[in-house]
Amino acid sequence: MKLADQHCTHGAPALDDAALAAQLAALPGWRRNDHRLEREYAFKDYHETIAFVNALASMIHREDHHPELRVRYRHCLVAWTTHSAGNAVSMNDFICAAKADAIYEERSA
Image (cartoon, rainbow, N blue to C red):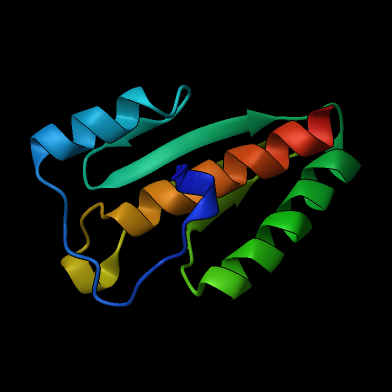
């Protein structure tokens, strides 16, 4: 099953380095930054940036898994970590990253 078709689960454990590397290979554009999984998305203007953030917020609410967002005029940095897994990266972060990519691709089409 594709990552974007899965759903977050409560109590997801932290992933080890091998699992992190394998999952990162499936998500181009994402990188591990210390204990976070992050990607920056680019847009043509602020209106498109905020529209993406609003679409992302809807998915975040459904999954009940909340990222750090850094919003600028034509960019949005999305950073995932799982607090209940000791502020480490879990499968929940990869699932939501894949869903964020799907939202971005849909809006960019």
